Length: 255
Length: 293
Image 1: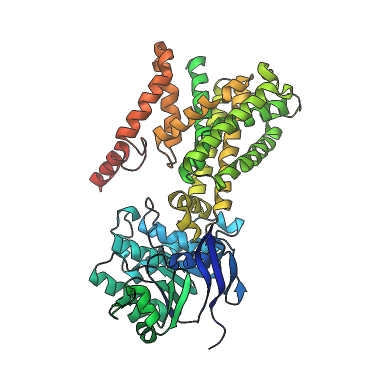
Image 2: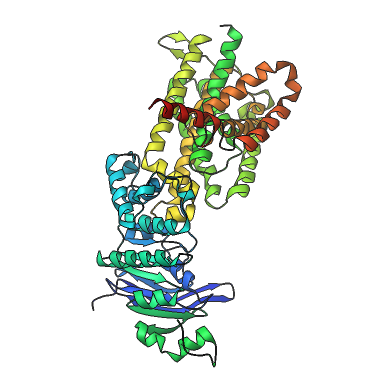
């Protein structure tokens, strides 16, 4: 494999005396679905936030496509090609579903003074947004206010917004939590399709069945430290991982 | 129309312009400001000084006035990058008091006496007063509304809406909070500056107390009443709050009480404002439209 798309080198993130992340390193390769798992409070979301620019890591290096990106603000990361969703959904509640997606379509316009003065209410933006909404199956709700959607649709809306950025890397923060069974299946299908379209994915997942089924490789965090890394098969049988999830002496069934 | 009602009309139009400016900051970009009268005042003082001591005409002073208020708006918008909601509200109140006391105590600004002898605006060789000044103000109000309308249709406007709704989500979509909050502050305060300049030349005498905190509250009341974030809301709000005191003239002493009561009733029954989402006016309008088609 060539150079990794995303690489974290010895990333530490300290909040006062709390080491939320302690020298975590891993690579994500082009076209890969990499899962970030671990018990509650393991540092998964903190890890996401350092990658997406919300936090500046205390120490360590993050490279995206070979370029140092740690410490860049979130809007620059979006422009570089990293899209993300949020664990607790963050729609623009008073805008329509369509407008929610159009906000993301403006990515190339926000950086330049001249193009940010151009109108957004054009036919092209609307058609592009409708296409993306059709991809995630929300086209019939396009006119509705985003704040009125149920959680399942909000998760799909978040995915649609992230896709509208035309990212190279997609960060999915627990995109499956709170969904019903059939919704999980739909969402899994969507993630697979997204990968097929050439977008690499880093995801956080609590649902072991989903994580094991979807990811090519997994990185396990516990108390801010990387515990293990490997294919779902090796992770499933890793005694350290089992101990982290179930405690010592537990029965080895993580599903 | 009597001269009196024309004066009231002119004042309402000026306040509508200032309210439109605040609407850009509060309604579009979601940054609460309780110190908008400061920029109204800065515009008025800038124009007054440039046309009296500076000897410029209104028209050549106007671009400078807009530049000055926008620039000061940019600096005073900086706190919005670090403070949210209630803290920002308190900070902007502070800004209002500081600006007023500078006007009041620095001799350069005329101190407590204010600035008098502000020349009339000359357009096509004619000194504007009464009806012609009213039409000039109306013209500027139309231009302001046009600019606001264009802004809501631009990517910058959409970026501001997104920031208002959710800053974290917006920035993950490439919207720079710094850039667009400050854009809203510059635009909003420059519009207030325009209103201030018109005010100075309509009154021809200004003093610091015209631009105090009560004025800020009144401007904010206008947009809350009319409908925050809507295009016509600030105009309607200025109209209602401008006419009501005239209707209730015998009740002048209770004016602030009436404002408060009105605001509370609004929040209870029409939280989005008279023209806001789900308001009585909107619902009736869409029902009428639906009935026809």
